[in-house]
Image (cartoon, rainbow, N blue to C red):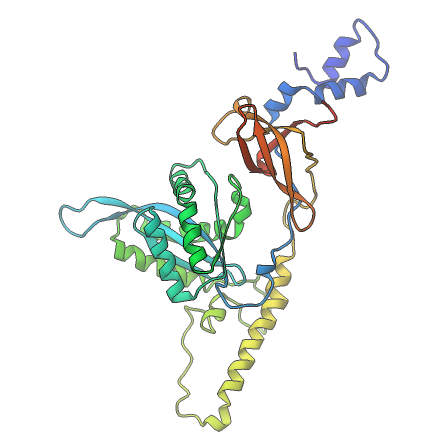
Length: 363
């Protein structure tokens, strides 16, 4: 009746006295399929190394991540007869400096997204790589966004290929693969929700709000602040965009100063190099810390029997699948697996969404 090791052993000892009974009871309970399906414990591979795009110096927005947020309910016009419609936030985040670029999108269509991407390229420059989610979330609004991305994946990739941009999709059901832009969406929504409240803005007002939130987020410190008053000002993403925090006061005019005494070009070059040195010493070194997933708890092998974890279903309703293939990363740790279910369908899922049942050796 799916008892624990102690109860199982005590019941068996009423009739027989098994040799090495405690180990036999633990192994029997451990191999119980019903108990494993009820527990539903997913795998937690060790946290991977930082991608090279996050630690190598380069221009801002050379490598970006994209995510959507919303919907935000806005008015189609001002005055009488106005009705509420949906609008969405398209977020672009720089891999190196966490610079944010927010675009208001009127609808979840292929053309709306491509126009937002064109506006981003025109104002921030053409990126070489774009990372994007390819997952299906189970919040109603996020599910709508996920379905849009899945339906237009080929069209988006074709546009990126024509522009000589490499489009990289993360595995399905793996939001932790895009923690950088997920954190950016969380920070942006923190300010947007508090400003909007229950009011309905127009599309122009929403776009203005997005740009103001963008300025606030691009003025946030990249590193923990020091309590020493003699330290430098905190390094912000705005320093790599315009040379200072976006919300700081402008510098005084130097038009009346002699150029021979200023040596302006050399001074600007020195400031730029100073930013790079601080970025490498303060920010990049801070990124090396692993705050979770410090040990590798994944022992999955090809041929193992697993459960496909579904957020909106109880554990007993999760699908059974067999591991066909593992995809190791640059550090030889596998974090994505290819699976086949009893119906013959194949899926690619992160190990964080898989619950192991029995290994090939146990079978």
